[in-house]
Amino acid sequence: MKSIQQYQIIVLTRDINPVIRKGMQGTIIEILDSETFEAEFVKEDGVNYEFEGNYTFTIKLLDIN
Image 1 (cartoon, helix red, strand yellow):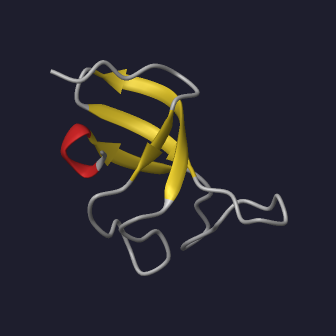
Image 2 (image 1 turned 60 degrees about the horizontal axis):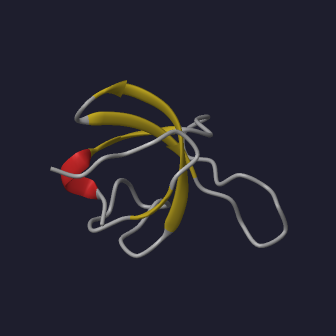
């Protein structure tokens, strides 16, 4: 089983929504449980990606590489 830590850089293995897509790198900002995390994704200019008013996104262990 993968060990995920806060502030770890991850790569998505599937699309989360139309903005947060497979292959994007993000950072784990909160560990909700052993399978569920909050992550943020930042553009090259340092601004967080946003979708429907959200700047952090819930992802599952299956969603990351």
